[in-house]
Length: 211
Image (cartoon, rainbow, N blue to C red):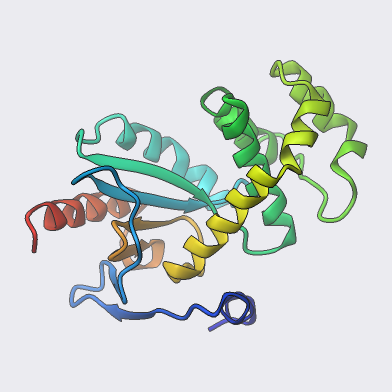
């Protein structure tokens, strides 16, 4: 366990055990994690962060896969806050979500970080970053409103929930998939990004059939 992972677990008092599946294409969570899906729906999580280049490269594949999901599958992105900088990116994600602009700006904000190489500061006030204010205005978002919502109780609660999920699912890197509180699929368990989602589909079917 890396030092960062150990500190997060210690902070939350959560340390679920993980048993490797026989085929090593996924890991099984023990104990299983709580799931907030509606009715008999199956919940799938993608743990990601805007600062992660692998998540950026994975995003087009996820977008295509998401469009084809069965009606009984609920998909949710979890902006994993591994460190102070990633907490800021996590808060940005949940701010976009709260403002109702996430579908419009999600991919664009990814592009801003990795295509345009503009990175949020780890410690400086975000309000001091003129490039960020300019970009927000271009997206039709008032910078003052964005910063207010980003520091709000509601957004910070969502960041804390993301941290709890990250620890509960024993996530140590991104991108990584979580399936209905029972399984995770990491990039190093499969031969390709596409195979990650193919494995998720297998696990969804496994849960659907009650196996």
